[in-house]
Image (cartoon, rainbow, N blue to C red):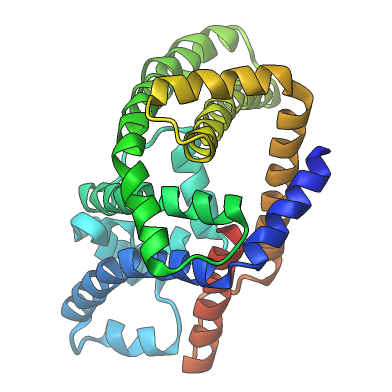
Length: 292
């Protein structure tokens, strides 16, 4: 089976499991909803009956937004112009490649999401591998079987990603990059030097992600108990099918890039009416579903 055929078959299997896709979206929505409610309360308390509240009804008040962010804490510090439309995606990408710290409440929400995702991953992979409907009992039985196994796999992931986003990131961008541009006087050259390091870092993260993704699949399909064995089997499979594995990852990446590009074209800015705000939210949720 070619990489393109495998990608198309994967899309077909996902399309034949709409309840699965809907459930994952509900999970994403449920994790983010409490943060949105907290943010709403903070905004309402800060605005009150001020003049800024009146101007906020007619559009975005960037000066007030920056004033709010400067005195906010917790999730409130994320309320800034970069969260609007496509800017939110760029802000997350920038934080990812620069290993920027996030507020503790955001980290906690992300940790909760990852934990729930680890629980569901076994059932999701099992459902897609079988390519036939499974009742709730069978789905959650598979989730329970692989949850603790995936927790052990997550420990290995944490060690690898901790190394990549810790010592490796610091070595590339805090030590190697300054040496590369030490005698550079052209800003464009420095920019491309940093871009090359971003590419190297991205390839390292991508290689790790491929190994762990295949390890999860091998663990479920072959009912493996040892996660180190699953990792070893995944590495062996990738080594034997290197071209196909890399091609499939490239196809997935291009598909994701196409979704991001489409979102960049249609994502609106801040809405000025109830209708435009509703449209903004709808487009944002469609992007989330497409990304899943």
